[in-house]
Length: 76
Image (cartoon, rainbow, N blue to C red; front, side):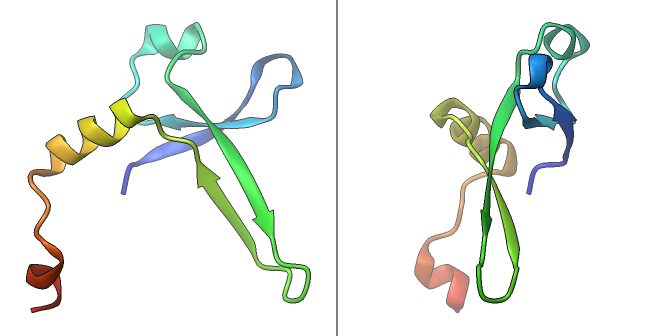
């Protein structure tokens, strides 16, 4: 899990996700924010938000958390 906040995009560009560890300069210039997609269920009105992370983000945060255990190690 990555801690962050939602912020309104510039110029009515929608809502974006901003990681807590994003630098102040990136925040000021709009860098480091990630697009949010919303999906809703027509039957139960459940709302799900997903964030579009880059491959660079995935690699960075996986290294931060350490090597991930294999599938068999997770269920054992």
